Amino acid sequence: MHTADASKATGIDLHRITKNLVSKTRKGEYALLVVPGDRRVDLRAAAKALGTKKVRLIPFSEAEAISGYPPGGTPTIGHKTSMKVVLDEELVGFETFYCGGGSRDRLLELRVDEVKGLTDAIVAKISE
Image (cartoon, rainbow, N blue to C red; front, top):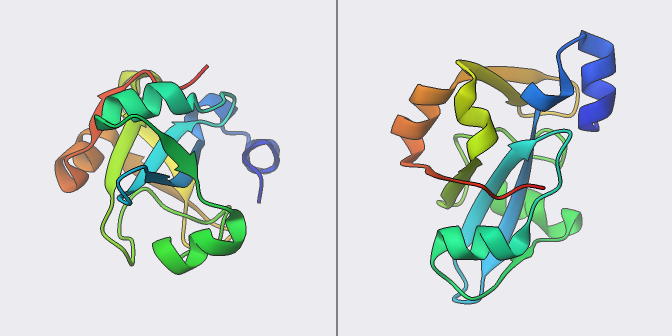
């Protein structure tokens, strides 16, 4: 489910429902870029946050094999492949946010402080 559809169906503010985007650095490391549903990821800012020159989004057709979840259902935690997590700084202003719940028809509410602790997330401005 697209974040806008999830917001409409649940009544949850689109800014609190995340897009969880599987990406890959120039060095071949995977990273999950987590941005509010009403924002676009800034790949240059994400690369800077990850300490690399370039990061690219993984095509949806490949993302499930890496994360273990279908696009639109990818949670912020618990992935098949270990990867760094970059949380957009907009999200740390909330106590909780919502993300994919493992399938396209479920949302998972997570506490920001717990996500940071479980994933050792990098917090940076990576959206526009």
